[in-house]
Length: 430
Ligand code: GDP
Ligand code: IMO
Ligand code: MG
Image (tube, rainbow, N blue to C red; front, side):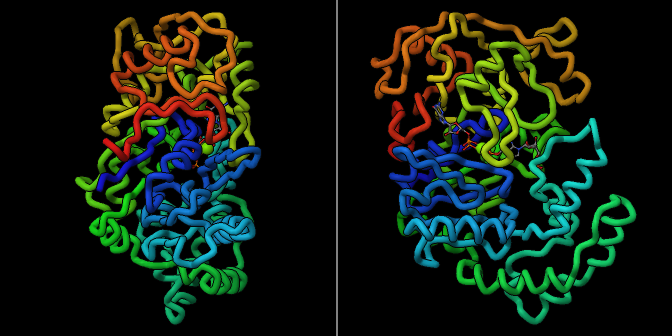
């Protein structure tokens, strides 16, 4: 059975939640494999809007939800999210949500370190979501993190938690001038987490392996986007996990040759939240218009998103890094009313044409984008359900994105609602 992955091809917020919700109809299990509650994935069904941060976006379709080992989990956020969904009659059985016993816990000191570091960086702040993501991945890599398997071990957990608290508190107070955390309080809170989440904790790699072997269909849901990848993104203005499709293998414990089709998500323009380079950013009324018409405010932090024209260099880079088989292009409707629409086709750097993003953090600031200009359209698009329903210039725009990125469209989204979608190809059928 083919497994399908949905991966952000820009700087996140491309509409992964919407597309995962749609594709989940054809899947049995939806799996998160990296990131944490820095993600905010929006699902709009009818007039009801749901934002999920940790629970996979297949939840509204009643699918099995798996949080893989590569995810960093703030257990209190997860409990709140699960309980809110349960109060709506979703995720009722403990079995419907599985959490990897190898997933790392985001604890209060991680959040405190994240916030304090950003404060100290001042004008050079990265603009993190403040959810403790980076410090938790740091602990994982320095082999000082705590995993769900540790939490479940009632006898050894208190010592594991206490171990290093003094050192962490000294770092918080003496280096970061932040408040220390209270061990006793944290232990009590963690004990309650064990009671509330314990029934979901399991070896999800084993579960996914058995599921695939028995023919169940998996849908992998990426968090963030390719340009926020710790290795391949705009370092240091990135998140702390690998966001590309290769991370599925390590972050879900699923061998790479079992991942079938990779769908790359992109907006019909570009946005980014937080600091860092953004070659096609518009600091003018066109940018303001995209923000307003696109409702470009973060689903996690509510921050206004920076907006700019579509950047084909980025999406080509994402095609290479992720092995994109198809694109899901969202928010085409937001471009309605622009007389001319620009698309970045390549960059110049110091007078030379370049085809990919440079690694140098100083060079990225000297990038000059080259644009192609396309004619716009004035008709609203929300009712379109096939390419033929689109105005000729909107069709031409989509074709231009496909030609420039070298990736065919599987789906074009023309509104936030589940139904406001043109489906061209079902990736589970390929
Ligand atoms: P994600 O993080 O990739 O899941 O994306 P977010 O949910 O953070 O941000 C995407 C936003 O765009 C959400 O508010 C969606 O409801 C909305 N959205 C998704 N697709 C479309 C679309 O085609 N048109 C419009 N107007 N809004 C969309
Ligand atoms: P979804 O899954 C957009 C950005 C933050 C910041 C940088 C580092 O909804 O697309 P972090 O808290 O991860 O250490 O912040 O990454 N960022 C996102 N931007 N969408 C996201 O997730 C993001 N998750 C993190 O704004 O610039
Ligand atoms: Mg988002």
